[in-house]
Image (cartoon, rainbow, N blue to C red; front, side, top):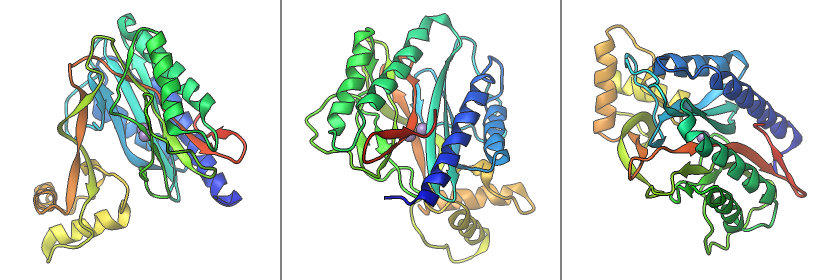
Amino acid sequence: MLDEEEVEKLRLAGRIASQVRRWAEGRVKPGKPLIELCEEVEGEIRRRGGEPAFPCNLDINEVGAHYTPPPGEGAVIPEGALVKVDIGVHVEGYIADTAVSVCLSSEYGLLKEAAEEALEAGIETMKAGVKVSEVGFAIQKTIERLGLKPIRNLTGHSIGRYLIHTGKHIPNVGSMNGLKVEPGELYALEPFVTLRDAAGEVVSGPCGNIYRVSKRKLPKNGEARRLMQEILDSFSTLPFTFRWLTPRGNPKVLSEAFNLLLKQRYISCYSMLIERTGKPVAQAEHTVLVLRDGVEVLTR
Ligand code: MN
Ligand code: MN
């Protein structure tokens, strides 16, 4: 169990994540450059005393997860898009993870509503001793009642200190999984919703510019060694992106060192997760602390 001081850090991370999510929701407008919005979101997290626990994710339409813009990208939010803003905040490694969907056309409004309703239904079933499959079943039922489909291969997840995933999953569909929720655990619940005629599953796409350390070692010498040291010192077990790295002198040197680390597998890239039939996806997410009796939603 976390002690009171640790829970306070978690609560602060949750409060910041919630404030920044609300702030971001109002800034999703057609024509807005993705890179601008992401940098503003990350700036708001820091201004409020948190650190981003992962790069701001902006996933559009059929992209379910794991995209952040690279530096210098010119892409903007398209007209009529269904945009997911997924935000992670940590305070001394205590992480809150939250997301909201913004629907810029009336056509997909129901997807957003279904994701939010399913999230609430999932939270209502969360308590110590409940099977994760029961939470998944409540989420699935809510989505299907509205005539829509959950994404069955995206799940919520347990969270640890400086770790965004610690290996337990909260499914978005019912299953035979007998695994139970334990007191003291921290979970992100995140239903993903798509149209009824979609596949209801995501497949791996190209690199979405979000990276992780995969070899905790340093290359022999040069700028790659310096850069890997920076990555280990600054992010360690948390995801990061190229925009967060410090250039020294010629920017070309930095990207060459970065590419070397990728090629030699010191770091690896998360693939974007894309709905297999190209149908739009909505998401809602909160971080929930499981207490001995009941739960505390940290990102309301
Ligand atoms: Mn998230
Ligand atoms: Mn999450």
